[in-house]
Amino acid sequence: MKIKAIHTIPLLCNFKKEYHWADGVTLSSPIVLIEIETEDGIVGVAESGVGPTIEPMLAILHDAIPHFIGKSVYDANRLIWDYFMTGFKARGVGSQYRMFSRTMSGIELAAWDAIGKAIGQPVCNVLGGAVHDKIGYFGFVQGDTPKELADHAKELIDQGFQVLYVKVGRGDDLDIAIVKAVREIAPYVRLRLDANEAWDTLRALRMMERLKPFDIEIMEQPVPGTLGPDGLLRLQGVGMPLAADQSIYLPEEVFAMCSTRAAQSIVLGPHETCGALRWRQAAAIAAAANVRINIHGIFETGITTCIANQVGSTVSNLDDGNQIMWQLLAEDIIEVPDLRPVDGFLPVSKKPGYGFELNRDAVARAHENYLRQQAWTQTHPA
Image (tube, rainbow, N blue to C red; front, side, top):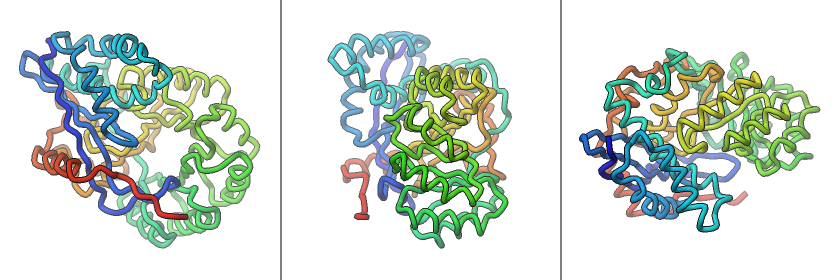
């Protein structure tokens, strides 16, 4: 099954409302839609997660695509890393694994969709079979003020979510007020926080001590990811479970994190690992260390949710509080399936490929939005 063409469509998907986090305020999600067309008429669809701008990723994709034309879709992983060695690393940017992985992940993931469609099987079966029938997700609490966040937390509890996730790192007193308000409205749920690398070591120690009375299940990446395992090891004395996020992208980094026992949870998505194969390698490394892996969301559409549901269902150590981001969008670009979790869970699709259908009109609107707007973030002064 040879690759006839690879199409890229840059999209800008607006959010319903402002997204507040440690890095400011984000207004939309930049995406590159990837479609692999085979000579047999099969079309595999995925997306590449973008940041901070689309254009550099489009340049890499357009340089890479000729290396795939006429080759077997079953060789996609080998072709990706052949291109890395001869077309990307050879130009003196070999250290940029993360940029490369996020860019090329859409091709790797679209190839699995094409294979699944060609043989009439869901991707989870292509990868060896699902070990979970449904995947659990946390309720992603949104808002600016403590009251807005508490009100949204109440809505999520009413929808059946058993785990809530709150962004901190927005200012010490504001963080305490936010967590206090959410905990008061949700006294019994499992509560997770993410500071998105906002604190240095001393500030992280101080803030974690202040937050301990609110019964925090996991504190995610409170210090810069560039510190690696050592950054999290310095925080062990607080006695709060830690999740590694921005400090890990590669399976090799997961190995280093697990071998040092610096984190109790690995937060990682298939875009960051350059697709499904290496994400499952990372999950296996974590499993060998008796550490859970959480699906990490990026600024994405429902495509990535369908992908993560299929790939995540194949690993035994998957957590029950994973991340989805499509619900932030004013308009998603998939028609089916319905991705609203029921009591925090989504079933694993049994349809061929990833089991979704695109809303082509929504894709066209998102592409037009990209053409109209180039800036995708806005940061409010502190």
